[in-house]
Amino acid sequence: MSEIVFRTGEATVLAAEGQYTDAMPEVLIGSVRGPVGQAFASMMGQVQGHTRMFVVRDINQLVRPATMMTTKATIHTAEYVELLGGVVQAATGDAIVDCIIEGILPRDGLDELCMIIMIWLDPRCAEDPNLDRKDLYRTNYEATKLAIARALRGEPTVDELIANRRTVRHYALEGVLDDEG
Image (cartoon, rainbow, N blue to C red):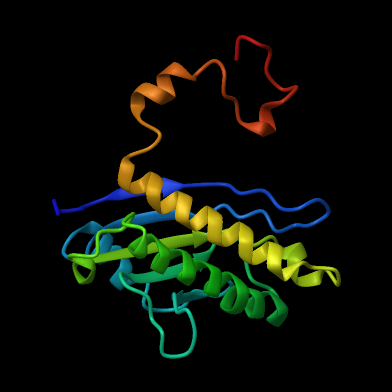
């Protein structure tokens, strides 16, 4: 395995109709001896409103490579923490292990790597009495696998970004920019 120093990836998987369970993880993968390892170690404390935790699949099941997850949204409720440290953490952990099984993450040298995953968990999920936890699992599992794969493949490439500069536009710009945007 060639050394993985600093790789980034992201993915979005949309929720089922009527749910707020969109998943948008941003992944940083790299050597424990490089900048990713330094960032990982510096995350070993807590910041109010942005819980940081190792990714575990269940009690005593810390994933490899060692992975730290944190939130993009500020945490305000115990219900949010329960979803983050429950369904979302389990989906993230399962996705990481499946990436190893499927050869997306290299099995050799896993202890030389670490990952940081920034998680999007819509705060409305914690307040929704009709939350579909299966969909919350699905979106986070699929998006995490895709983000890790994209990071390791270097996707999108610079050539892809240049080629789609005029055809792909951020959804928030709909109606904001003209077609020349």
